[in-house]
Length: 327
Ligand code: ATP
Image (tube, rainbow, N blue to C red; front, side, top):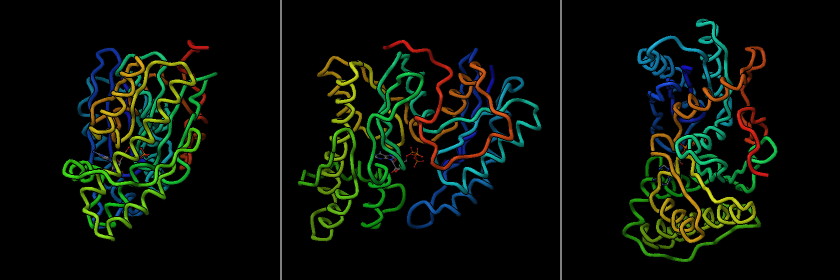
């Protein structure tokens, strides 16, 4: 099976071709870089409009034979961006006369880790820009075991960096600055299996305004936020009795987060896997790979039912491509 994947939920205009016989994966991406501030939905959509045709053309040029299906991100994401990518996917599937596969972006973040690791039924920590949740497979769905009660984890970090005047995206800048910083106290909020980032974000801004060096605030932000994510991931492993953990999402590119998760996994004799950075941040590779799996399972959608869903939750997706292996 050879699948064209298209991704465009927020900032990455991306297209990929995946051949599940040779396992060759080609990904072409064009990132939207805001002139100032954070991601502006209308500007991001304009970026999609101008960049999507080109990345698709490049990906199709790399395909070593005909495409069997077109897979695209149906959501969650920014509505104006999703609508453009949905239109591109539908018209392409129509032109090539192949089926359409509608992929949940968050399930794709998870499945690429499972695909790359070969793990059977891992717990997944999705630490992305607009989301933060812990997922586990049970009775035909990826259940949301824990999630953010307010903002996504990457967005929280980006809001702090906007406050200090750093350009988007802020995550890598905080990671860099934290190397020179030392820890200060910031609010740590985990309630049961859920986390909240808005309090820590305000406290970090206040600390900076009061003159605490930005390196120290950056260090404390990372240590506190990542400890919260690690705590919930550990509790999910413990409560479900599973011993595999995969990481997904753009914040997963952070080395300190990966180090903390690895250490936690080692301490409890669990296995931990994080895909390479190119497949952690938004990318069409993960859409093409899950698209191929769904296509093989017969999970295609008629064009008439292929509307986008900006609030598409991972637990809304009937997982047609897996059988229950863990009770
Ligand atoms: P979603 O997948 O929920 O739609 P998204 O589209 O915003 O989220 P991702 O590509 O998964 O995108 O993640 C982008 C986020 O990752 C940004 O908030 C960015 O600051 C953050 N990020 C990138 N690199 C790092 C890093 N090294 N450390 C921490 N955060 C990072």
